[in-house]
Image 1 (spheres, rainbow, N blue to C red):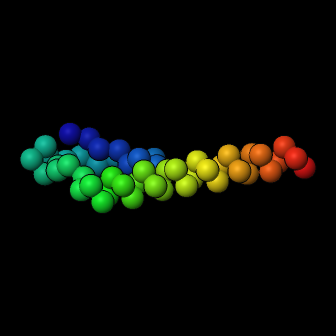
Image 2: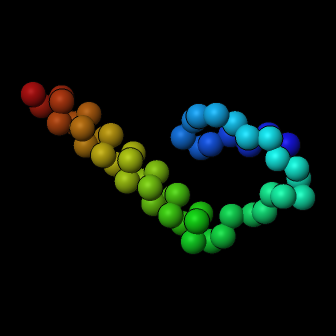
Length: 51
């Protein structure tokens, strides 16, 4: 099994029995991180339009 980091980077080879589902807190943290990143990107794009 090959895993790739969400944000890009080097992949890892893992045995299927060594992989487990992400904890709910980890999933929530990643969703919030992505929403924050996307919001900042949109705000920056809007700010550039008015300049």
